Length: 402
Image (cartoon, rainbow, N blue to C red; front, side, top):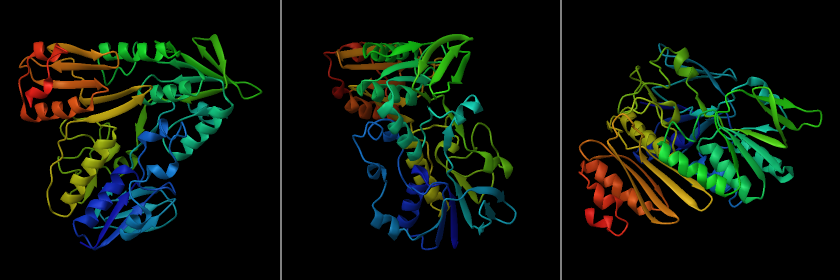
């Protein structure tokens, strides 16, 4: 095998390249990127970088010397527009045609904008890449009244960042509660209280939103044609669209994302996928998280070299909002949940446990308790039966249950 082509240059692509070289692959690696900035992590964009507590350079996964040592052939900024499985070639927007022995699709996802006209409004922003972050950071300097459309993780993180800067913030969520797809009603209530205590106004069931740009480029937000308020800036945090077009065009097996097996392999034996764009092999849907992008890419890269490495990681993600570090391990499964235990050890430390009928842990959300998350991961991996009384008792030392 002489040439591997990677489409995408984010977290998954970076760790794939790192792994390929680390495993001794000496052939050509070609990386196609639609951004000039490559191999960087995105989670800090809506937090530390947006608040200017961290520099753009801090996002880099690897040092400049490391990237240089990878000996990558770059195609940037460029865009893959066609994948020919029969010829094993990728056609780029620039007109280049790249042949491959193995191909990794790591195209990730992009910000979803529910109404296309919103994208052309001067003071409407999204948050997906460095350019988005820089644009929003600049807008925040001159904005006092901020509207955020979407009460998911990205919207809540931006709300927290803006409130800490003293901005007036209002959140408009389509659903009946915050982060409804990923957490239980108890956690949604906790998040709502957290933000309301910080001074953010939250509008739930905002199902008929309209944005109107005024002559002076302010944004008027209407719900069901009732004028609500005028804002200096509107941030659309309404979820993500999976960038699966290349796979669909090539007629790979695609559902909400690209279907892969535990080795990251698609329906074509020479094509792999990892990160946001790839469906988690154990769960059946895409996981948009830092850990998933990294670890699925590492497994896929090893498998591409013939060291078949299964990826079945328990989903893990985190969010920083105000004084809270919120970590989620596992997935919200209401149909399997038999018991909910809430453990509160202090005003700033609370954990939500979700057990099935066998007293096995399905999901845990921990606020300001990273040690407990590490322990819970071991419980899940070993299928340990848990005692709900011990979990709930704030005086019981859970570290005894190792």
